[in-house]
Amino acid sequence: MNLILLGPPGVGKGSHAKMFTREMNIPQVSTGDMLREHMRQGTELGLAARRYIDAGELVPDDVVIGMVQLRLQEPDAQDGYVLDGFPRTVPQAEALEAFTQVDKVVNLLAGEDIIMEHLAGRRVCGACGSTFHTRTLGSSMVCPECGGQLVHRKDDQPETIKNRLEVYARQTAPLIGYYKAKGNLLDVRVEGLLESDHQVIRRALGLA
Ligand code: ADP
Ligand code: ZN
Image (cartoon, rainbow, N blue to C red; front, side):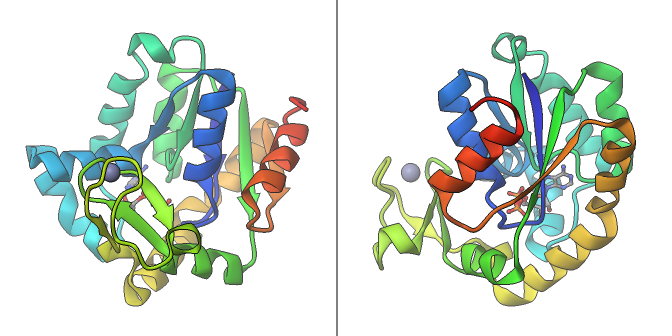
């Protein structure tokens, strides 16, 4: 299945994408993770992307489109994928259509309280890129996966979060209408409880 997870920052796209990856053996294609990996490696792309990401702005379309196009050509993406964080603009969605066929778009909806709690408590590993939450970590700043140092993402600070939500409303929310018109959009309201939310998403997709 070729799946897109759509929704505001902090709604849980990454967490649900990881669960689909395990259940269906399809790769998670997260442009946010890919861009952060470029920044960690200090590539030219990473250096160019940093100022947009740190400000909570979108990285230019041509940069992310090229990255996703290459990623979807990899062997592991030939039997399905779950896109998380892409597309984020109508031009990105149009470009995507030119190189793949999307089956379903899950539009995750959540109250602002859930979103703010997710973003404020989110910690990311500087070494391996895994994401965790203070709910399960407590005050530890050590990565449970690799022992690396966890950090509070610069773009998860309150001033930047506000901008990212505005950017979402202005540039990404129009995709809801775009996919609704195509007839493959599923609206799913989540409550911030990973396991039960995931079952609701699976049912909406006809998987459970
Ligand atoms: P979240 O979904 O929690 O907002 P991501 O990790 O998906 O965070 O994205 C972090 C940042 O990476 C975004 O704020 C943006 O700067 C950049 N980014 C990720 N995906 C895209 C995309 N498809 N187009 C443009 N910029 C992107
Ligand atoms: Zn780690």
